[in-house]
Length: 172
Image 1 (cartoon, one colour):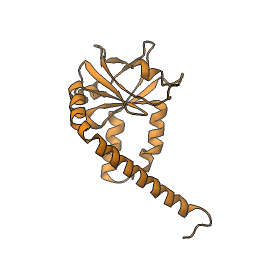
Image 2: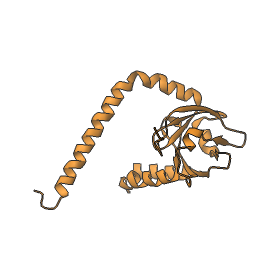
Image 3: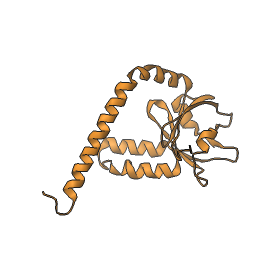
Image 4: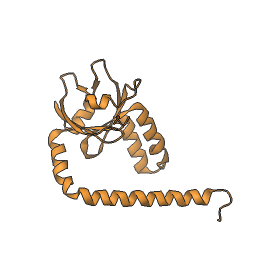
């Protein structure tokens, strides 16, 4: 069975060094394309740091950000803060990335971290915050899964209806 390229799974305990560098887990580095060595950091939910491979970040911008309304106060505030607080780093020859200090401070991260896969990107957690998240969230896992699945099917039906209406020759 081969690796699923571009999908990050698992959780790992790591340490950030005195210069703010963090080794990317080998399991994650194996998922990257050979030329994929640039990462975008952004503030994440639950006071985490999201780490996106650059190509995935571009996909995120095209898939999500471009559909946000441009002129609402909430959207402008979110977009301004997202880009102002995000950072970029290259993977060094030892497989490390320099995690921006302002994001480490915001996430409450000192040295010890937990890195978790999140599908197309991964998260850097302050360990106690991660343990609290798991303890509070696991009892709701099945309900959350069922609700997320229901919402996914609902979106799919919505997109199929939109596609049907936009097809040439369809009834209007």
